[in-house]
Image 1 (cartoon, each protein chain N blue to C red):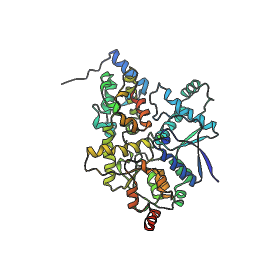
Image 2 (image 1 turned 90 degrees about the horizontal axis):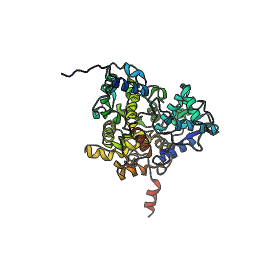
Image 3 (image 1 turned 30 degrees about the horizontal axis):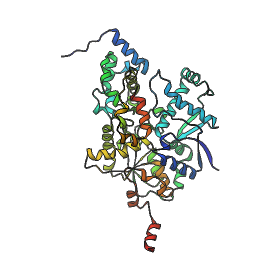
Image 4 (image 1 turned 180 degrees about the vertical axis):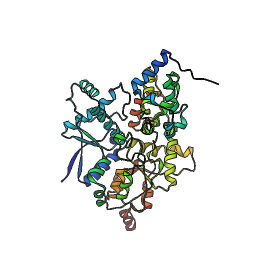
Length: 135
Length: 306
């Protein structure tokens, strides 16, 4: 049986503080009701559900940055509008994206795009995905 | 008398969704409102920047507020849902956070200071609050009788609550009211407020195809003839991704995806050839003909004459 160790390690606290700096201190209010994951249209494709992401952040667990959750989040804001504790979860997802992107890692790379897609997809999609998924 | 209002089209309304722009201008003119396109408008940024420490993404939308004032207006209307969301949210942030507002003004030191005195409206807002659907109804000459229209709101018209165009963000009714005014039959579906996948269409298009399958499939099962949207990206995803859906789900039946302004123009008697249906992946013309909303009298007459 695995236990979660509630640590006072500096690294964990630093990570949590960084998320709070970008997304506000409401993250500490999450009490794991799961409303965000229940409403998320992409939850089925996520390796960690939004509420699990919230918990890992509360613990300061940086491994959350390896989850695909915040890349698959399309900021539809269902979670944020339904959260009973008033947490803007979409904003927390943005914070995680920003932390990764600011360390010079992109989720989307330009050379991965197919020529047909470049011709067909409207610029509104490119501008948004570049803003959210590239460094 | 024609009322004038500042109009922010946005990039996609000038390219991929140019018929959303042109039909909006036609129907608003018919309703006595001239959409005056802003001089020197710039991209709104397409998505609202959520990180607290990043003010860069608020510059582009706020510059458009300054352009609006320069053009002599204190309100600006837009038609693209994503532009509406980004402009309205940046404007709200500016009004509510003095410190950030000051920093934005200081950064744009060559621009006149903005004081947060512009109102951002979506075209649907304007129709509901000022024009009223009754006035729309009075202009209808080709009622969309018998056409089952599924309204699709997507995300950016409704969320967050502060900028929602409908009081009820979980079960909005504005588009259904518009459909009634046009003489059509609304088909409300639980998926009408669920995200289409938005910009994931670039990197993870299989996820968007899956969303399209669920959303369009559900509306089709409720016997919707056509789906009505107000966002060019929703239109693209729900329309073009039906190509991928067919491979995913062979039992899937295609449904055309149209802008609300295209249906308004059709109901107001505009020639369907001016509505841009040729640009759609799923052609709306066959179902509109089947419901008797498009009649090609001249062609038939010409054929008989031959």
